[in-house]
Length: 126
Image (cartoon, rainbow, N blue to C red; front, side, top):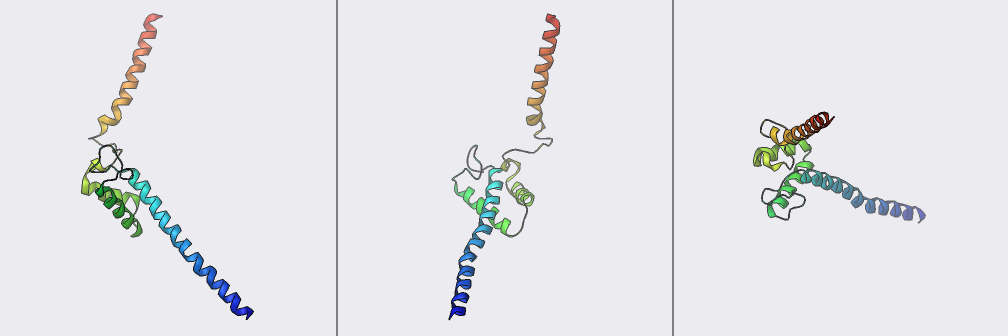
């Protein structure tokens, strides 16, 4: 009788721990999906990421990202697919290329010019 009780307890522990193991896997995919969705712009919402948006397309794209993650695709592959499908504007922070160089370089140039102007102003006052 004792051996049946031991076997029953072992089976109960195995069966009870199986959903917890699956929840960990789902949570990991969900966390990865949220990380990717936080870096992409919602096509229909103004100044919102996919993660923040409540639009129907945002829910569809988050489901697509989760599906592709379960298929084993990487963050870069998923982002490249979405950029190919929706264009460069899907990225919330565009990469540095010929089209966006002015966006990235203008603040740096302005700060440099400010320091040069302050330096000349200080030299002139001495």
